[in-house]
Every structure is written in structure tokens, then in C-alpha cells.
Image 1 (cartoon, one colour):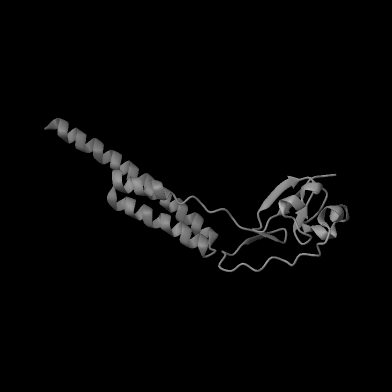
Image 2: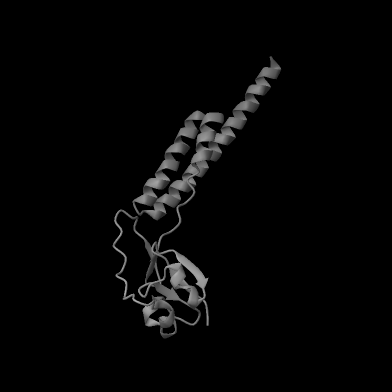
Length: 160
């Protein structure tokens, strides 16, 4: 038998897993599964070859998982949902550039870094990506200006 992919309780793709190991991985009859040759994800209970692996003695059908609240909106793909990964907010780099390089531009980098998480948690993934790029750019500006100021200061010190 072909291995199957499945969506866990957090709608994260898992697998591939052999059919006889699906129940061990928390797959229930309502869990969405997919394997090569299928056009779309389907509940495990609708696939005949999985029926023997989903039934356990004394167990009936499991209720669907309770709805989750306070989760960021999720993007859709092939009629299923998944959550886009959190963009790198460059916060550590922003803090280091503030402390070591150029305070004013480093502070802007920290602010942009904090906005990445805010936009992502509010479901605005595009703005989170833009804020991540801006945070990275401000970190670079801060680093370059810090290096330039050190070079200029050293040159002035050598001339005196």
C-alpha cells in the first residue's frame, strides 16, 4: 500500500506514513489524508483501504476536534487550510545593531521587527513580510552607518 500524508490537529501536514501506522499517529476517521493518485485531501473514513486501520475494538466514531479560538486566519490551498510560517523578524539583529552600531536606526529596526509578529498574529501575512523586509533593511543601514562612523572616527583620531 502507498504511504499517506495527513493533516494533524494543527492543520500541519505530516507523513508520509504507512496506513497501518496512521492510528498510532493520531489519525481519526475525520482526519484529512492524501496519497499519490488522489486529486484532493479526503477524510480517512471515506477511503476503503484505510477502514481496517481506523477501527479499534470498542471505539465508535470520534467527534471532530473543537473549534480553536484566537488563532490567526489561515490561507487556503486546494480547499484545505494551512498556516503560513512566521517570517523572520530579525529582532536579535535589530537589538545588536541598536546597541553596537547606530542607535537611531537600530530603534527603527526594533520597531519594524516587533510589527512582524503583530501583523502575523492579526492575520495580515503580506504586511508581516513587508515589515520583516523593512526590519532587515534598517538593520543593514544601522550596521553600515556604524562601520562608517567607526572608520571616520579612527581616521580623525589618526590625523590628530
